[in-house]
Image (cartoon, rainbow, N blue to C red; front, side, top):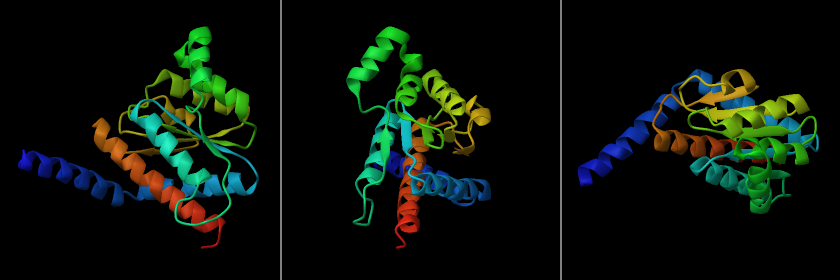
Length: 192
């Protein structure tokens, strides 16, 4: 079992090293930070959404922005779309789960806001529909996915594709990148 543990850690390190060595991923990460800073300094809002573990990551990252990451500073207008369970169940019941995030976004977002979607496969219909709704509304779409081609490739204004199809390893990288974005947005916006 100890060797299996070491192997899993080694796989995670190897993927993160690949991410580190990808100029495209580093450039896209910098673009995410710029887009988020532009929106938030313009009094726009940032929304996150995902399914399963990615929904948990969306909640986590939204909390880092609305609470704090490192700095004691003003709260930022950031929300995970999965926080209202009554709305999620009502929308799912009345319109279908594939519309849940599109409907939630429609009720909250305005032109100039930013939607960050997390999907390891890039194939989740509710995430794709949210991205489509965002485009209709003039909301920028930032996507974190895995390596496989997906409809999000064409829908996202910026995309970070982790070079893997292994869901847990992708999610580990999404959270790492999310933390980098939180830290650098906070520094940039609050002159730290």
